[in-house]
Amino acid sequence: MIVSILGAGAFGSALGKILTDNHHEIKYYDPFLYPEINLEQATYQANAIIIAIPSINLPEFLKNYPEHLKKIPTILATKGLCDPSLFDDFTQFSAISGPGFAQEIIDGKPATFTASAPFAMGILKNDQISIELQEDLLGILICGSLKNIYAIGAGYHGDSENDSAMFIQHAHSEMEKYLADHGAKPETAELACGIGDLILTCTNETSRNYTCGVRLREGKSIPEIIDELKTVEGLYALQQVDHQGYMILEEIYDLVGQID
Image (tube, rainbow, N blue to C red; front, side):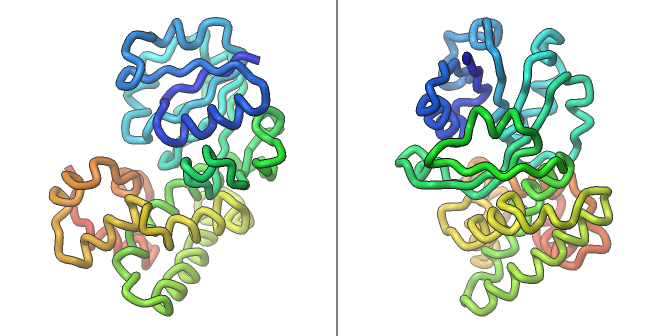
């Protein structure tokens, strides 16, 4: 099977490793890393497409997305989008999400992902990668957004292990409530895309979102933090979610302030 991966960053490359291990042919589209390959070349004869473009760039990218590509089975691996309506006109659309740092996957370490459709399970599952099926597309997308936001709060509160543990417990409860309030399944928060990714992102100092929170605790401003980290997915996700009425999200929103 020919699989086109749109976005050859860390996670896109990790997914490429998995697919190569599963004997699929990989083509990458990434104008920054592979400027000589255009979208038409990267998707020529593709049997499946995986989107791993950063969430902040994805809405603009989709504005000019070719109609014929929307008929190809497509898996969203981008975390940070809460609105599946962007993909309403895709014929076969699904998503994957879960805890898995790219380098560890490339190094052959095991990981578990939540998939919203059996197709993703079929092409990604192997001895290294476990896939759990949960047909709650909206819930999977929401969890991928919230965990990045909560990781900012975890970094801010992470000056003691006790405080970190309490924060994650409360964040998980709030995640369940948010899912229920927004038409998704609260039990999705119990899966790899929920509690699994929440724990990983909220406890690991290599997470840019967690580091953002640490820098805020140190008194750095958002422009200074962005200048240092370049990409903080949780800051973009915070602009997409409904923070009012959710104690932790409101706290992080107030902490971060208005982002241009």
